[in-house]
Structures are given as structure tokens and as C-alpha cells.
Amino acid sequence: MRGLALELGPLGVTVNAVTPGFVRNDSSHYYVTEGLGLDYERATARLLAATPVRRTERPRTWRASSPTWCRTPRRSSPASAS
Image (cartoon, rainbow, N blue to C red; front, top):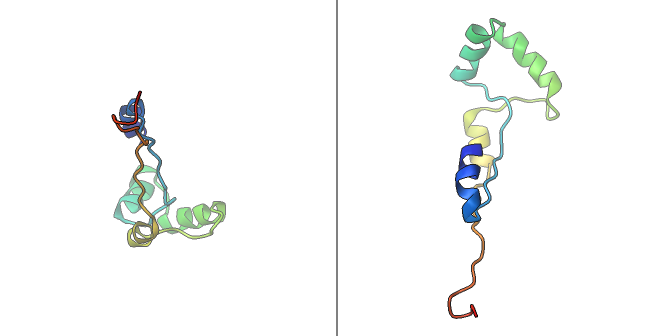
């Protein structure tokens, strides 16, 4: 998202993101077990304790519930410009 913001910001486009938090999927399982060397269930339990909503997400859960917005600045039409 930062890359898009840096690229589109000079054009007057604001870029925002809704992040889902910790998502339970194959990638997170691999990262936790292989990358961090932790037990997945224990690590997930610790993450839940530190998360205000006390839950993890699944890919379909947050994708379906997150709205998508795209907004560009209003520009005056050439006819109204002086």
C-alpha cells in the first residue's frame, strides 16, 4: 500500500488499506512454524490474547466483509475554470 500511496499521492489520489490482522492460512502456518520455530497453536493462542477482537481471520472471512473504496479528487471541469 505504501508503494501505491507514494506513486499515486502526487496525482491527488489517497490510498488506504484495511488490514485483517492475523490470518490463519498455509502461509502463516509456515512462517510461524518454520520461520519463527514456534508451535502454531500456542503462537496463535498468544496472538488471540493480544488481539482486541480475540479471534483470527480466515481468508474468506475478511475478504468478503471488507469493503473496497476508490476515490479520486474532484476536479473542476474546463468550462468552469477561469
